[in-house]
Every structure is written in structure tokens, then in C-alpha cells.
Length: 221
Ligand code: GAR
Image (cartoon, rainbow, N blue to C red; front, side, top):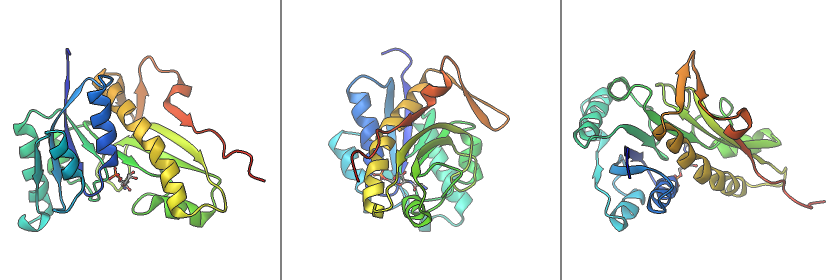
């Protein structure tokens, strides 16, 4: 396929978003190649997925770097070495530091399980349940050095029932994560994302295409 986008994935755990990206690439619906998976946690299940799909992976131990900046410099080096063009955070639980941001300007994406700017940080789904919101969802955005901040690309909304547990809401949101993350990467690969004044314009996209609303909860009384 022409113009394959070279991806580097960063993960800390389960890696189901990583898997969703692998699946779309293997199905031929995402013109990209995963050049490297980097994990910051030796036990991350994402590594098993990389092995299964013959994807190059690397465990970078944060404790082995003298500073946080040095850690992210080492990471940038490994990604550049393999020709990575877009860095994709897939459940990567660290704040990205300047050396990586500088190496990949407007070329790092993150997904978060809430409708940002609401509920950044850990346990976005639990925060949503605790606040009794009626709608939550997930957000794909460019990474800018803050915690779950940066220009928003796509959001998907799901309903929240007052009876939901954190796990139930997480599962409902995760299904949408697996849809919007590959879609955002596809838009990037097609050169259709433009950042201006802290917001993203998507060329050839109608406004209503850049959000998805899940079907309602159903006939709950
Ligand atoms: C996902 O729900 C992702 O949105 C979240 O971690 C989970 C990782 O799942 N990320 C954050 O909370 C970032 N602040 P996965 O490892 O199965 O993709």
C-alpha cells in the first residue's frame, strides 16, 4: 500500500487499544505499519499482543533513566531509529515530557476514557459515575505535555445510567475507544488533521462526523 504511516505505540498495560489498531491494519483498513511497541512496565500484556503479531517491542524501565527527561529522550531515540512518524499512546500512564514532544511535534496522540476536558487523569470512568453524569465517552487528542490535555480530534459519547458500575461504564466506553482511535489515526495518515489555535480542523469532514453517539441504553424502566 502506498504512503504507509509508521507508528510507534506506547503502552503500560492490557493493550486492547493497541489490539484494535493491529486489527484494523491487518484488515487493510488502516494504511499504517507498527514499527515498535514501547512499554514502561515489564508485565504489560500489550507485549504478548506484540509477540503474537510479530511486532518489535521494547521494555524501557523508567527507573533506569536518571531523569524523566532522559527517559523520554531515550524513547524518542528508539522511535526515530525505526522511522516512526506518529506516536500513539495506548493506555500509557505517564505524562509525556519535552524531549519526546520536541521530537514529534503535533505527532503524538492519546486516548482518554472521558469527554475531555472533564475527568482527566486516572479512573475517568469512575469519576464520571461518581459525579452522576448522564453522558460520558472517550476522546482522542494530540498530546501537549499536560495530563490528558491538547487539541481534540474525535470524541464518542455513551449514556451513563445511575445504576452503572465503573466496570460497566468502562466496557461501554472501551467499545467506542476501539472505534475512534483507528479512525483518528486514519485521518492523520490521510493528512487531514490541522492544528490551529489549539483546535483541530479536519479537512473534508462534516462536523457531525467527528463525534459518535452510541445507541441509547434501551428499554430500561
Ligand atoms: C483505556 O481505557 C484508555 O482510554 C485509558 O487506559 C485504558 C487502557 O486500556 N487511558 C487513560 O486513562 C489515559 N489517561 P488498554 O490498555 O486496553 O488500551
